[in-house]
Length: 71
Image (cartoon, rainbow, N blue to C red; front, top):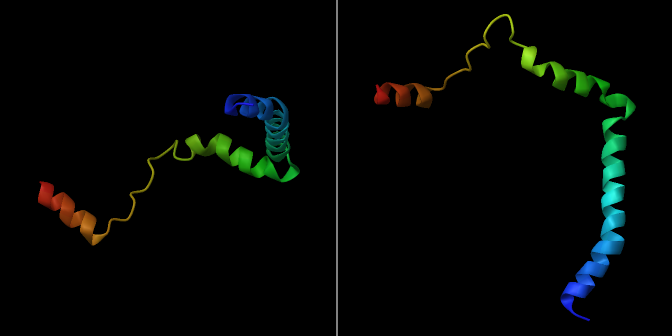
C-alpha cells in the first residue's frame, strides 16, 4: 500500500471524526453559559471611543528621542 492510499484512508476515517469533534467543541465553547460577557464585550469594542478619541499611550524616553531625531 502506498503512502497516498494510507493517508487517504486515514483522512476518510479518523480525521473526519477528529474534525467533527473539534467543530462540536468550538460550538459548545462559543455557546457556553459564561461566554455572554465576553461576546458582548467583543461586539461593542469598536464603539468604546465613539464620543472622544482614545487617550494617548504613554511614551517612553526612547520613543521621544527617536521622534525628535527624525524631525
